[in-house]
Length: 334
Ligand code: RIB
Image (cartoon, rainbow, N blue to C red):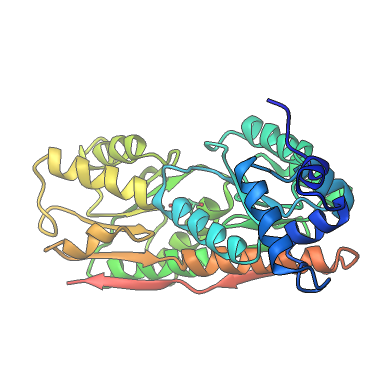
């Protein structure tokens, strides 16, 4: 079906294309166009299902008012919360959002970056996978507006919004040590991912500062899935390695997997084992056994990343980038 144009509406309503354009761009009052003419044009546009030509608009305005978001795992409630918050913030600023999921795959992320550029999005917010620095370097080189969220590349000067992962991990490990545990294991997530490596550093720092030996056999590098959390916890609790009496899980999905393993192995919390995890899941607050987690300010992260990107769009020539580090909160359930 042929697209309805402003020219069609003009000839059918007996006014000039300019008058139609002014009405459809909400400028009828500014140009003192009569209410009758305005209502006649709006009624006709609705009847003919008129849609503005986005491509023509983009060429005329030099922008599409569209932002791309690439998250690394859309099935993770942490990222879906961030995506929702970014969408709400940008919609209020008259921007549309295209949400992409890289599923922790660098190749997929690279494909999505080029797709979003082909769609001429005005900017991109990315939670990068652990090997995607080349794609990010290209965006930097092209001066394409973007902001990293949740994860960043320490050797790269970019705008990014993260939390103090090391402190959060330190607090969780210290919580377990203060409860008398000397064999604290760690299910660490995807090696070299910014969040995983910072959380591992916080775990090591807490052991060291409390006189406990770092035992490599008590650290399991996994991905960020429930299944891997389950397998890692099962191995740590089956006595194949030095017996862990407590486990710190690097994120929400790993924690769920570890708790499933504890349940399937008929172990009791806290008698046989204690589990703590990074990220919050609402169900945690229903637990009736001692538990602790780190609450990440996901909404605030989404809002700040959106603000920084829109600021960057306003001042395209400025190349002052910064890392915004938000605080986490240790929540203990006794
Ligand atoms: O569950 C989400 C968290 O785990 C994020 O910080 C992400 O980077 C992963 O580490």
